Image (cartoon, rainbow, N blue to C red; front, side, top):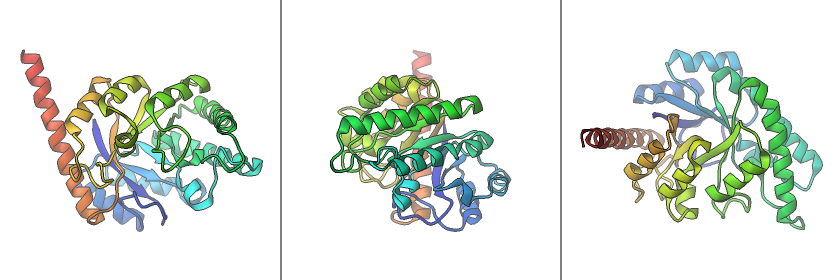
Length: 281
């Protein structure tokens, strides 16, 4: 498993993004710390120069494992489940507009809060129907391009739609697309899942991307989560993708990024030792 951290290409209100601001300077800092990749939070692909963006990332020998779309909700309130058909259509088209860049970078497209929340006067069932329709359309558009979508189960305080792995797997069955899976996030899982490890194993091959933050949404190692146990469960599913830090820039962005990397490297080293002992036994 490789390690990455989230970087917003533009200013954003969302707090759990470690780096914002000067894109190239931040990419250089992330590379200098020793990360393998940088996960990009992009509100609108039209706001970035894809060629220049790729050049900056490659110049610093980083990969882009995933592209986050949540700022379209946070900044513009676009969502798949709005009671306004024009907003739903705009959300679908915005997500589809990420496909060319995702194909270019070999990145998974993350679907977080762009799913929205159930508005007043609309039933949960209707919201789910809108959500399934939107996901099916987006997945169908992305499939010929080899692009995958990963929906992130979020905690109950942020949305009423898809909180747990179990609910996410049921949604995958309803959508019925091979390029649609899950992004699991340890911060949200700590709120919603009885056992993070059991839920990770339940998700299995449907895990397309993985976010880490500690119980307090600070960097891994700042709270009470057992990342050795968590990443061991993730490894046991056969997952070989990125483990990506999405956490509050506390005590500041640079310190959080460095401490996360140090903690996660130690965790991965411990997992290697455990694997070796298992083989020897």
